[in-house]
Length: 94
Length: 355
Image (cartoon, each protein chain N blue to C red):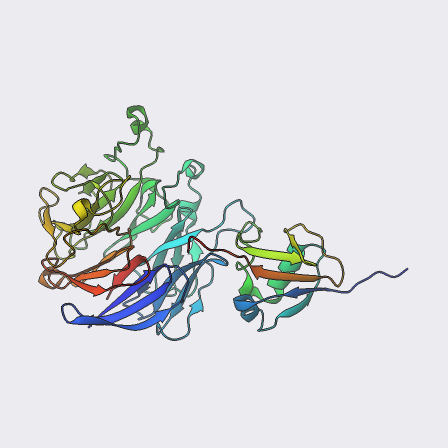
């Protein structure tokens, strides 16, 4: 029996992509969404505070999808899974 | 030449010109983003802007040229792992040491920079106030919106938080005490007025540079003056069409001067009688005079927010500017005697600074 050790694939867009070295796709270690995002912050300190706030919560108008499903900080991430970080659809008040 | 920095719901707009001769827009930055406040530090020439992205949270940015590259300042965050997040930065003010700047924000926090705004740290003295769990937010949040330094004395500092009232420091912000005596709002029951922790919804405070013990305050239902550096306050609203409003400014040359822009009431936050008028006192609030020549005089139901009224110069050459949530900026080059429209058809104006 072999253990799957493939990293997850985190995808960033817009200003988040610019803060992460200009790259859209990032192979990162982490068993949950927040572990993955903390790995991202360690690799690119400038992105700290942009996706997660000081409480460790995903900002209200950012959506994180794991394998296409809207997810939260604690959502498990399987090896090799694709995680998309996207600005939410907002409007009306702005 | 006067430079105006106009923070709006959809970006920063920069204007240059002379009062009376018209202003030209010279730059727009942060297109589409809410710019809550922007200022140029006259000592360094550096521009600083506070932007609250609805997606990515509040940041402070700095640049040498508004049309050039803006860089994010470091350290503008609350301690990690707590139960609160920074919501917004409302104001930036220069301090009384080289490179010293202050920034005030929601939830009732003060940041300090000692390198001209490149890096910031949270003021621990105010953050660790024991009464903080009881602080109540105003309608705009728990915002620290007024920072009053004392000319040439960096130890003396006053800040105001809506609705946690006035806070005074005499050791450069290491320790703080309240300065709410005399602030007796109509929205509190009689019994609660004795409770210094009960909410005092201060809207804006300015200190007179010429006589620093003298301060003026626009309150949520009241205009007040202090002659003892914010320890006690006296209501001076008599003679105004309303005691409600947000912004306030002073003539730095005259400690008896103050300017306010009254709105009808908290339940109707527009200029009274459909007329835009600035009210001026030159006797410490004993009397008030309307200054409206050149301002809209009919069918004008305008709101001016707390950071959207500013000044540059002093005495007879005092220039005054204010912006409205209907996207106009009005200016006066003669201490409020006459006014003209400086800019119009902007997004809702959050802040105006001049230099």
